[in-house]
Length: 227
Ligand code: SAH
Image: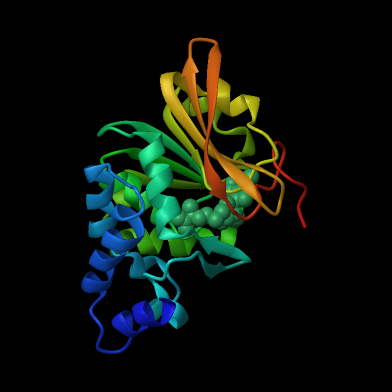
């Protein structure tokens, strides 16, 4: 499978064809149904968020290394988390873990106003350049910060998405959620996690497990210890 996609996006390959195949086989065939999410994944060029040396793998069915020991998430996981978040145009969304900027780009394409926090300063200029290259920089503000406790100054958020693995759902993130809205976060050990969808109902929160997943660790106050 990987070889097929590599061949499609290799020299002379057509990224838009590879993108359409990704949407059909990795997303639609596996149960992503939100047409707006499918449209976003079909519109944002993922190759713009992948380092030059591995651009030919941009539509592979896996997470890819982006430097500093971090990864751009697998396309399916980006779509799944976006679907779970249920964003609407104009929503103010907090992302924790900017990485390449790809997830933020998908949210911005959907009309969200994204604030994205990243603790690895070295990744931020690249993420900003990636977003500018696809014309979505106006919808995303990136800041260097330990985002494990969220961003209380900007609360309440219409949605919070954590793209790194947490040992538990940080209470600070529950508190920063607007009533009725959702927090999507992988929770578990450093090695494996369950994607959790947390919905706020007044001062109660419903925690629903979605699917198994593997993310790099959330490092910081409400995350894991640094390496
Ligand atoms: N959403 C990204 C993938 C992120 S990988 C994309 O679409 O490409 C996870 C990211 O979380 C890494 O870049 C890592 O540095 C960052 N991270 C880990 N702990 C963090 C914290 N406490 N605050 C902010 N970012 C954090």
